[in-house]
Image 1: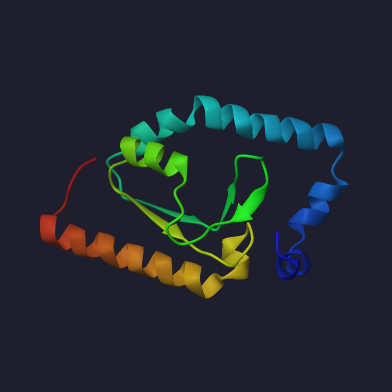
Image 2: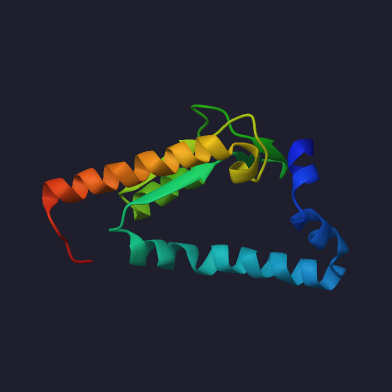
Length: 129
């Protein structure tokens, strides 16, 4: 997390002040979902267009690091294998909360994504999923 982010959000205060059991159980729940449901949910949504905006990544040592343009992240390949219509956007120089550290970049990415979907829809006509 960037210091600027930490000053502007209360989520860290809530996390820090939560009982340890709540934090541990929450994290275990997220990890279990990632391990058991991620592929299923992506499979269900694989025909829909998706956008992944990522600003940080866990390296091989388990440390959270900022992403860099052109960085190869293994799970992106897995995601692309399941979801053929995914756009991956890497946003560097910000912390975990991309939408707080770089709101204009996130808004621009989302606007471009919506425009792309609208243009594709106009070209192909209505589709049922």
